[in-house]
Image (cartoon, rainbow, N blue to C red; front, side):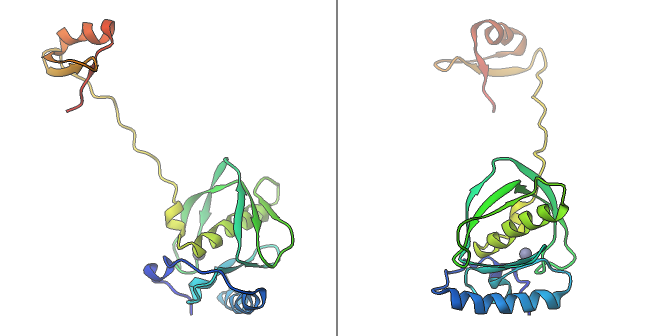
Length: 192
Ligand SMILES: [Zn+2]
């Protein structure tokens, strides 16, 4: 059973105490993932186990026990994402182009990067970030790409009364009179 309640998905997962415990959870996750048919990744808290284990199955099945992202590129990219906990929902998220991960069941570091001609590399890189996010109680909606609305600078009428300041004093006067202070003496308009 895959959990779809947001409040349960926001629970922080605890580290597992051994690789064996992690592998058992990993096996359950892979079974559930394969049964889902259309999933490419799953985190333990999505099946009600609040432990830091997740699986990714893009190029090959990958179990990550107590995973941590230890490096991430500053550069990000946009990617369409879905989640087994939110069936039918697709959103555009912002993700790091490349990451380096450490996990208790892998010696050394694992590198994932979307910078290749193989689209599966991008899917895997995004999926690893998505699943590790789950373990920290973060869903894809928290990574949603939003465009900041553009705010045009306010314009003033010639006879409109405004308040200006030079940082020490303030003056209230008509815009046409204030203009000289703003242009020549470095005064600025106080937003009201
Ligand atoms: Zn998910």
